[in-house]
Amino acid sequence: MDLELKFLGAAGTVTGSRHLLSDGEASVMLDCGMFQGLKTLRQRNWAPFPVDPAEIDAIVLSHAHLDHSGYLPRLVRDGFKGNVYASEATIDLCDILLADSAHLQESDADFANRHGLSKHRPALPLYTTADARRAMSRFKGMDFAAPYEVAPGVHARLSRAGHILGASIVEIDWRGTRVVFSGDLGRYGDPLLPDPEPIGQADYLLLESTYGDRRHEPLDAMEQLADIIGRTAQRGGSVIIPAFAVGRAQLLLWYLHMLKKQKRLPAGLPIYLDSPMSVNAVEVYRRHRDLMRPDIGECDEAYGVAHYVRDAEESKKLDTTPMPKVIISASGMATGGRVLHHLKRYAPDPRSTILFSGYQAAGTRGSKMLHGADTIKIHGEYVPVRAELSNLSMLSAHADSDEILRWLRGFKKAPRATFLVHGEPEAADTLRLRIKDELGWSCRVVEHLESVRL
Image (cartoon, rainbow, N blue to C red; front, side, top):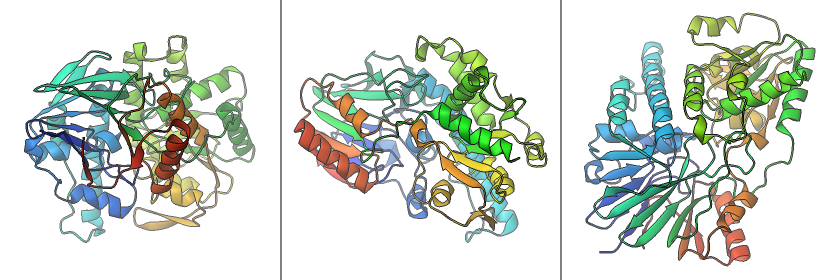
């Protein structure tokens, strides 16, 4: 039977990664992500799943970020009974991320019900903490470079992608046809993680295109951090850094450690990591030290640069003390979490700085602020934005267009077809043209819910 590939998410957008391979005898999904950002995208999370979850034999996850894993509890609740295959580090991070996602959704639904903020009566979470626990029971760990039979006659193999701890490039051998899924490719020369591993051969390639239309600024992140923090503290303000709890927070701690070691931060300036999920993720990074760059010798010391805030009351006190400080808090695009309370306090303060630390998807508060919004809506009220705004875009964990092309040049020959996913339309089409012109490959941008015969 013909092998069919369906793009159930991350097509024409950077969120909701879900790609289904099936041939009538077996069905395997690559990623199971949640849609984030614009309301029209988030509403897809509530739509009936395009295929019967009970008919999917297995899922292979590229990594733990919610736009790649965050729909799993809902899919399990709706009938998926197969195994979820992923690297051990991805499983450990999913344990944190999915539980937190469920808790936030339960909390948001409860808040909406108590304050009458929802059109629905009652407002319901997409899934519960119990659903997240059930999803975690479906996981099976994979070692890198080892083949695993994930469905009859279907084998999966993981290679390191960089990006975040445990992130993987997924190779599927489907009864003689090799399909490679890039997942999210990391940066070359990342301070903590190894470079994306080259893949020699693929019949078909699913390739991310998040930064397909741009090159990361060749600016020094440490220089920028030192300048912004020093300037803000000098005028008596605080620096609030919305940061992705997994990956970005740990990288920021590394840079802040290096700056403190070099005495380039204001003396006595307190640094807080105010995100229980980020704190838990630090422990996972410590546990999987073998996945880090082998020449990194100061990780434990770096992770000690900040005071870890776990208690909600302690978090609230950070907004009442006037002294300058640095607060790293989730979420990275200011879509939820404790950082919203800090934004309510510090966004109206012209002495302070809101420092974003990477990609801001369309429709998120982060994107709106960086595009000049005078106010942002938080918890049903509009908050004025008077603080200095900046973005350390060079901290992105995604490969830029040059780095994507560098990885593609590692293939010994062109795949029969390359499908561009996980990118906004302009970024994906720009990358398509580069691949066509520079490599001469057959390449195209896919559409949401499109199916192709391989």
